[in-house]
Image (cartoon, rainbow, N blue to C red; front, side, top):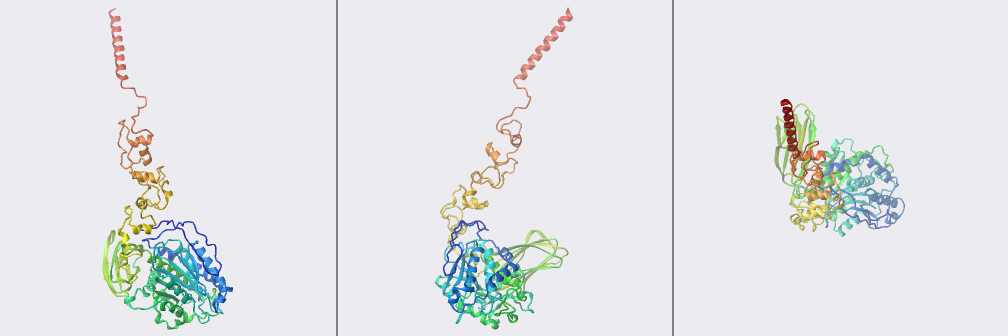
Length: 610
C-alpha cells in the first residue's frame, strides 16, 4: 500500500544555547505527504545538485576561519557566526520543521527532523563539522560535510518520514586537546537513548584520485565486521553505491577503513562514536586525499579549481536516496521494485541489489520489440542465474528466475537486448531483507508493535497499526467527522483527517463527496454507471445511478430515460405528443363525419327523385 497524503500534525521546535536563533513559533499544521510503502529514492537523489552543493560551501566558508582553540572562542567571531548561519538555514530549509538544539560546552548544533511514528525508534544521522583549522576557511575539509547536511534538509523536509532524521554539525574538532564535538554528541545520544540505524560522518569530498575509475571517484568507508555483522556498517556503504549506480552518476566505491591508513587522522574524530558502541558508522571521503594539497591550508577555498562539486553532490544524493529507500518499507511485503526502460540494439542495463540475508531473488519481466537475456551476478561477479529468450513476451510477465542466494553484498542484474532495434522492458524484482541483522525479515517487523497490524479497535477494516501510520483515530471509524468513513476516504483518494473534503465535489456533478459516499457512488466520476445520464440527474429524478437504465421507459410514453434526460423531461410522467388528438375525440369525430356523409347522400338522392 502506498501512502502519500497530508498529516495534520503541529510541529514543535525548541532551541537551547547561546547562539541567536530565528523565530521559533509553532508552525501551522503542515501539508506534507506522509511516506509509507513508497520508494522516493530517485526523487530525493534528483533534488540534489552540484550547483546547490557549491553554493552552500561558498556561503558557509565565506564566514572565514572557524577555528576555536577552546570553547570560549566559540562564543564570538566566525565560529559563532557559522553556528548562527547553520541554525537559521536549518530552520529556513525545513520550513520550520527541524527542532534545533545546541549541546555541549563546545556548542554542537543538533537538528532533528521528527518522524511520525511514536516511541523511541532508530534514527538516521548525517554529520559534518563546522569548525576549521586556524589558517583555513575549510571549504572542502568541513564545508563538504556542512553542505551535505544543508543540501539534504530541504528535500527530506518536504515529506513526513516514519523515523527521525538528525542533521548534526560538530564543533571543536581542532580545539586544543580535542576533538570534543564528537564526544559531547555521543554523550547526548547515549543520554537520550537514541538508537542509531546509520550514521554518515561526512569528510572532505571534492578531490578525486586522477587514476581512479569512474565508480571509485569518491569513497564510502565502513567498519569491516565480516559477513556475520555485514549489516552494521558495510551494508550502508554498499547501499550508497547501489543508489549511485541505480539512480546517480556511478561514482561511489565502498572500502573498509582499514584499507586507508593514511586517513587515520581524519577518522580519529569518529572513533569516539565507535568507542561508545555506535558501530553503524559510514565515513564518505574523497578518493584523492593524497593529492589534496589544500587540506588544512589557506588554499582550502571554495573557488579552488581542483575541487569537483559533482563529487559532493553525488555523496549527498546517495545518502538522501539511501534514507528514502530505507524508509520505503511496507509491513508484510518484501523489498520490491518495478522499472520501465528501453534498451537499444545490443545494449544492456544493470540494476544493483543489496542483499543482507540468505534469500531468494525473484525476477519477472515482460518485453516487446525483440529478444532479451537476463543474468544475475554475485558480489564476486560470478554468474548465479541466467536465461536467454529468443522471443518477445509483450503481454504477460515472464518468470525469469527465482534464485536462492546466500552471500551478503551487492548483486548485479544485467538485462541485455539480444535482438535488433529497440526493446522495451517492464522489469520487476523482489527479495527478502534484514537490515538490522536480528534474523527477522524486515517484512515481518516494523518500527511499531507488529501486533497492532492484527488489531482493529474501531472495526473500520483499518488495523490499529495503519491508523497510527495514517495518523487517523484508531477509536473512530470517521476520524474527521465528515460522514465519510476512513476506509472509504482512503479507498477513493481522500484524506481521512481533512473534514473539508466531505462537502467538496471531486467530480463536479453537484453531489458532494459525502453524498456520493452515502449513495455508494464514485466521487470521481459524474456518471457512475456509465449510462450517459449524470448521477445527479438520476438521483433528482428517482432513477438508480448504480444501474444502467438508459433504455428503460418507466412512464411508458415511448421515450427512454436517456431521451427524457436529453429532453429535460420527467421519466416518470408520460408526455403528450405535440399536435395529437385525445383518444376520446377520435370516435366522436368519426361519427360526426359519418352522419355528414350519410346526410349528404340522402340529400343527393332526394334531389334525383325530384
